[in-house]
Image (cartoon, rainbow, N blue to C red; front, side, top):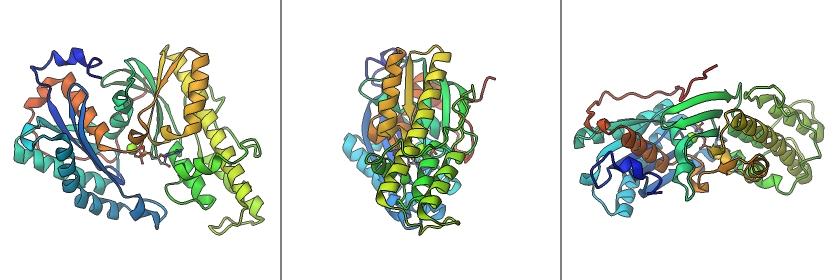
Length: 366
Ligand SMILES: Nc1ncnc2c1ncn2[C@@H]1O[C@H](COP(=O)(O)OP(=O)(O)OP(=O)(O)O)[C@@H](O)[C@H]1O
Ligand SMILES: [Mg+2]
């Protein structure tokens, strides 16, 4: 890791700079300390899953309030782990968007106030840039350029990545994100929130060939996705199996049927992601494919991508499993890489806080 970033060190006098990063865009509060040569010195994470579980999804107001409660204890844990003091921090990075407005406000208000109090610069981080760069934190980091498949709860995008900040959108979903489709489908068949991990676990014992579900836009000839039709196909199949004409949360489906439905759904979504991601990678003439975001934790997706990529001479890179879903390390790291790229950020003193609940990381060049 240090070797990978060695050229960057030249930009700074030794020692490397230290960035304190905060993530609070949805239902995870994350804090981490990262150096400009890519070392995570300490990190702490709190997931609100247990709190939102009873509601079947994230309740924004509860999420915002909980971030406020967690930020200080998590920051204290992070400093204790790193064994350094606040005085050693050179800059503060924070997720400014996209995400839930109140949740972003909680993290940004805290980060900006702290920076102002300590007279430190604030580095605004796009949440998706955090996800996108998270595989660079693994033991075997990819070099630029690469094609990125970003599959999270709110996004499904294919991106050409030429270097830090040089991103081109190749395609994205027209409706549901892959993670969202996993979550909604899981809910339909009575699985608990968050549905992705639960559905993929159930699918392990199911027959993926039992139900012929649609593979949306597989042959569209571009890099766009659509998953809402697949989700509807699962619903109509579940209704047939339960013998009902109206969908309801109390539909009775046998355990075998549920597992087969889960496996068939997962197979359809994975096949679509694998085919399009590889096609995009080959079109870009990239030898590296990088996967990021929560759905990147999916076992079948990992296996199928590696298998298909190997045949085409492409190497696939994933983030560590713990860094697939939201975390503070990826935000501190993205902030540190911005600083390594542009050392003048150290001189910035702008405390007019802003959040961007909806914002693009990259625009399409077509
Ligand atoms: N093993 C898995 N298989 C499929 N989906 C999974 C798995 N593990 C997590 N997910 C899905 O990943 C999503 C969460 O990922 P992540 O935290 O990256 O998304 P997000 O932060 O909510 O969205 P965004 O980053 O787009 O704002 C959820 O939809 C969850 O169901
Ligand atoms: Mg996320």
